[in-house]
Image (cartoon, rainbow, N blue to C red):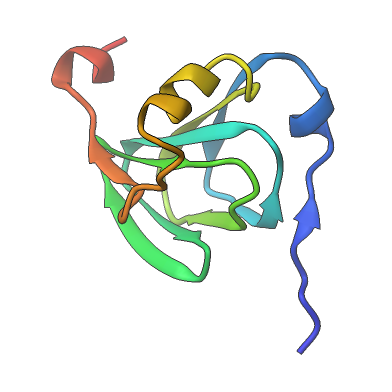
Length: 116
């Protein structure tokens, strides 16, 4: 089967930081050099990172490292915020964890951040 992932160059050579809301959509498999956070604000999201699928609910998020192939799909009235960071913004954090990639990209968002 042909690999259908694409290099998302706008997230690699674009601005240092971007943020967007997504509703009831599917983002096809892709990769880029930026870090990315996908945070579920309403409903649920099926997020796949390097062929591992995670179902995220309201208040959960996924942290995606550079060059990891990822995609996500929303159903119904689900809403996510997608945030990308240029690699140099958090490179020191990545170096401080000795270039290790987390076992699971999923984490919980504090209620204070959810209300922003």
